[in-house]
Length: 173
Image (cartoon, rainbow, N blue to C red; front, side, top):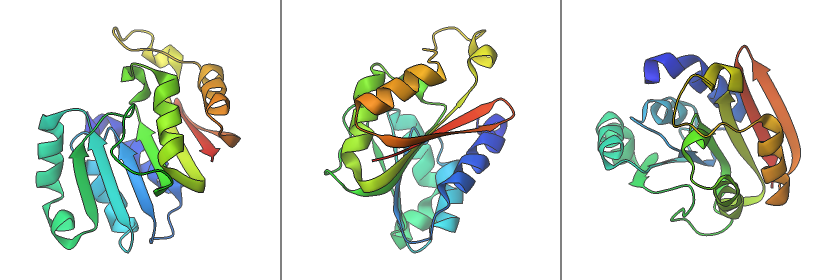
């Protein structure tokens, strides 16, 4: 799966525009490959990754062994709807291709809001709906539905970036 997502993963990391000293959370990190690339950019910061799959967390830990040892990366099992972090903790939170699997979009977005510092940024990347309509068991949300949820949870300054079939909604706490 990571190989097919390389373009959107790298594009999203670029949009993060990390200063190299931030606390950044990836929600739904899968095998940890994007977290590895982030750690190479945000080397003086702290990079966190969560996934609901214990199998993926173990794989991500193997892949990021050096960064875990150096204290640059922290990985754990967690769900977007109940993140194990205190309020106002992260500078940035990002997620790529995970919103389709969330049980409750409003709860997930509000939880991201909770863990972001004031003026922190949420980056939510996805593929356009037309590309995903052939896929069963995915919850497909329009850009407008996601924007509405972002506003409802308190986000402001919402921007939509587009590259080919990919979108990234960026919102400020």
